[in-house]
Structures are given as C-alpha cells and as structure tokens.
Amino acid sequence: MSEVIGFIGLGAMGLPMASNLIRKGFSVIAYDIDQEKIKKLAALGAKPGGSIADTASAASIVVTILPATEHVEKAVLGQQGVLQNLKPGSLLLEMSTIDPHVTDNVQIACQEKGIGFVDAPVGRLASHAERGESLFMVGGSVEHVERVQPLLNAMGTTIHHCGPAGAGIRMKVVNNFMLLVTAQVTAEAILLGSKFGLSVETMKKVTADTTATNGQFQVAFATKCLKGDLNPGFTIDLAHKDISLAMEAARELRVGLPVGAAAREMMGIARGSEYARCDYSAMLDFICGAAGVEPPRLPG
Image 1 (cartoon, rainbow, N blue to C red):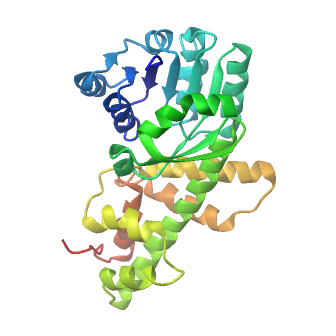
Image 2: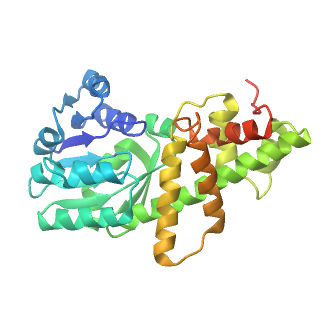
Image 3: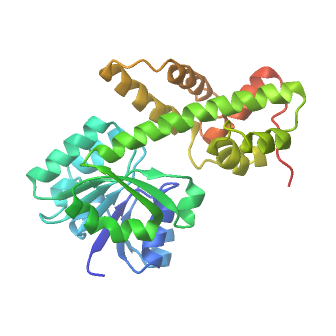
C-alpha cells in the first residue's frame, strides 16, 4: 500500500481504529499526547510520531480523531499543525465530532492549500471499533471519498456517503442528538419500571418486541451500565458536548428542540458529579441515585 497514514488522536475510538489499519497492512505513523498509547501502536508496527508536525509531514493521508472543536482547531489549523506540514496533493480525513462551522473552515483551508478533505465522523461503540465494525458518516467529493475508502473498509463495515464536505459531521450531530435523547428517555423508563418493581430483564425483553425498542436499551445499556461496567466508551462529558452541538445548531437555524434541551440539562447536572467521566449509559445510575433506587443490573 503506497499511502502513508498519519494518525493523530488515539482515544477510545482512535486507538482501536489505528490498530486495525496496521493489522490490515497500512503503513501508519501515529501521534497522541499520551505516549503510552503511541507505544501500544508501535508494538503493533506503527512508527511513533514525535509531534503533529512530524506526523503530518511524513504522511500522504492524515487522520484526525480528537475530543472537541478546540482540539481540531489547534491540531489542524494552528501553528505547527497539520495543514502547515501536509504536502499539496495529500488528504486530510477528519473524523472528530465538532462544530460543523469548523469542519467547513478546515475544508476551505485544505482547498486553498491543494489538500483533499473528507469528514467522516464515527458511529457505533468503542467495542465496534475494536472489532473493526465501525460505521462512518462521510462528507466529501466522490474522488476524495474513493481515496479514503480502503481505510474506512479496514476500520469499519458500513460507509454512508452523506453528501459534500461537511455533510458527514452534520449527519453525526443529528445521529448523536437522537441517540443521546433516546438514552435519557431509556434511563428514565428503566427507573420508572424499577420503581414499579419490574425486573430489567422483563423490560428489555418486552420492549424488544414493540416499537419502543431502541439500540440504547438493547445494545448500549445492555453491554455497559446494566452489566455494571461504567468505564467510558463515550463519557457523559463528551455526550454533553455532542448534544450541545445539536442545540447550538438548532439555535442558529431557529429550530426548537425542547426535549433535547431537557436531556442536555440532565447531562449538564451529571457532568458536575462523579459520573462525568463515566460511560454515558451511567446516566441511569445517576438518576437512580437521585431517586434513591439501586441501579438495576442484568444477570450474568
């Protein structure tokens, strides 16, 4: 494979995705502020990047997957950032969940420098990323999307080309708004059922057979908080950031999202507690604690 992949951001999603690229035979140079994560990739065969500039200058495609808007602005647009060091004819694959306006700014900056651009934020859970089963919401020209498709195929199983550059991140904002509101409703429903004296197994089984079924109860909660695992795949802190992106977009577009506003406020309260860096499914434990109810768990 002739492309050299610079991978910047080795968090809960980035580390397993970069690992899958290496396993599939890609040449990867990796960078993160956490040196231990770089060492993990190096053990698989990645070349350690000494800095963002070092990583970008050695690559023909740079992948960035970072926690928040400000991190992308600094890493990509800042002094000694990606765009100052990526050669013309190269391509930036930006996979973070950020303010869509900043995605637009990055795309324009890439175009001005003769650099290709694709935004491809990630769907599904960290456990899917580990298995190479991620989903990607992709924005970009057909030419640029085709160039990164081998990478996406190596890291996931499902690719949705949502439209031109910027369409991917906008789809991600909509997707995460829906999943986070659903997660809050799911947590409240489980709390109500627990107060009724229903077992969580019964609630899960019955709702799986009605139109009330959803991936939060059946997959996300069932594999995390309902098993007693609050270790983060996606923290409450980041969930609050993502739903806030949707609410800010709605404000700009003059769209009212009252249910979303309520869900964001609950996450805002939770992120001021000890649950802030727990998995977002721990919203169940947070509201159970406030109600004086023992958080329910699935057996096994």
